[in-house]
Image (tube, rainbow, N blue to C red; front, top):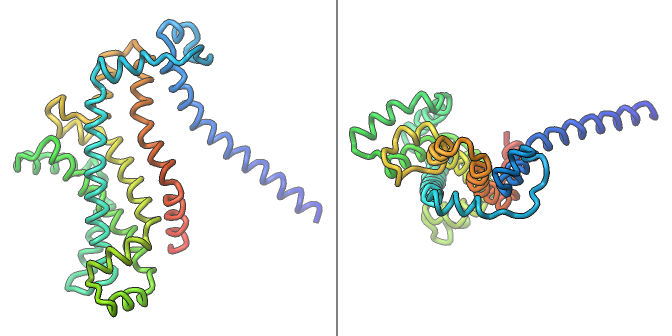
Length: 279
């Protein structure tokens, strides 16, 4: 017994040491970025951001957000992300409920077509998507929202259908007896019970839309429509030697997604663990 207990303790020490090292490798660059964003350029040149900032220098953020008009890119990304995620949640939850609970011709074929779309790399569809949007004169804002909505539907439908499949049908029967229609059952019974899955869908798609660069650089033609990642690349190219300003811009770009995850981490963890149990 002593041997196995010692072996277990050694295993736990090694495991926690490995996990701690991985966590530090992810956290330390983020804190270094924030620390540099509060330094002056001279202070950065002296120590490369390895020492703590002596005070909170908000001038970098003021220059980035106001002087360089970084707020425009930020608000554009907030708008695109919010609308796209809203569309994805609405459409995918309706489609997942239909695939899970309704019976109609070709249901399995259509569902497997959505699954097959998940196997196609996203960059492979950028050129045809751009050509299609150009033909319909939907470039810039509308085209970007439609394209990102389309790219997030497959995985979202699959995930939500998995959760809808696990819901007991007795709840639907009770709601139907009370006079609820199919849409009312979807809204009042289905959605409240799959909140963890919706949290996963929201975080996953918000991260994709917020960080998308290649498709955004193809679709947008004017600076005033640019989302954050494209604007950040142009900003970095213009101020390539001003590392403190670049770090301030990167901090502004990273904070919204971090805040979103912190706000929804309980739903995200429940959705991931419930999905693992379902699988």
